[in-house]
Image 1: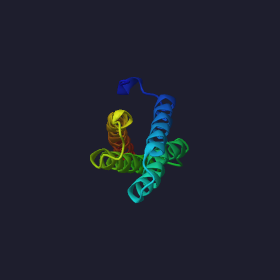
Image 2: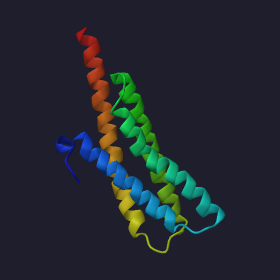
Image 3: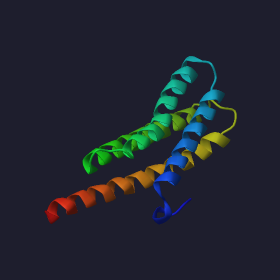
Length: 131
């Protein structure tokens, strides 16, 4: 894991893109059943949305807008993690190799974005107090 202090936006963007690719790889392995199809669509939407929304956050119009979009990234990551856990517990894949990797990475990304939101909100409050 890369330390928070050394994490720049390009590294984080790359991690989110790689996470999206991992989600797609998992989805492509799911069975063609009702559950597999449902979870495939849901997981691809939420798993790729985190990277796409992070890209949008880089062009946020204000600090409040940035915080709002980063919170959406966080929601999408949490939703994806739940999908992965459902797949794991329902034993929809023969191997948990990709699932274990995705669980680890989603937990790390969630931690990073929780800290990011906390920092951004603290900075916003201090900027308001400074006025």
